[in-house]
Every structure is written in C-alpha cells, then in structure tokens.
Image (cartoon, rainbow, N blue to C red; front, top):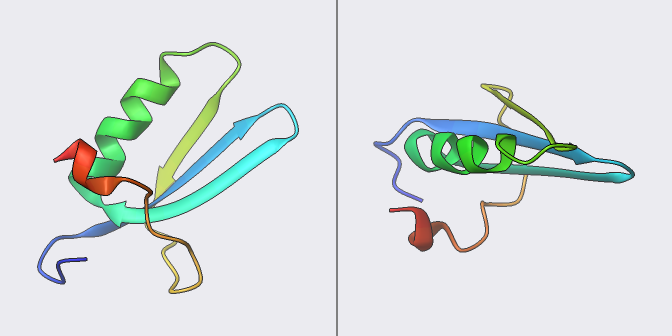
Length: 63
C-alpha cells in the first residue's frame, strides 16, 4: 500500500456477516458507495485503522 495515500477503515455488516478492511481512502470510498446501494448492507467508513486489519481485497480493481 502506498504510504503517501490516506488510509481508511471499511466496516461492512450484512446479517451475521461482518467484514473489516483497510485501504486507500479513495478506494474505500468507492467500495462503500457501491456496497451501501444494496439494501440490507450496513457500511461504515472511519479512521480507526490498525495494522491488524486486512487490506482491501482486489484493491487494484478500484483504481
């Protein structure tokens, strides 16, 4: 991940499924917008980023 780009935390909930990822802010915002358009999916984006969070999968698809 490029250190010069701001990094955000993406939290996704859908029923019993809960996912957390970290990634470049612009990519996280794009993914959050897409996911939020689906009913039944709760999406939260914040700055609570830790090294324990996995990176956003397939991040290159969102560039």
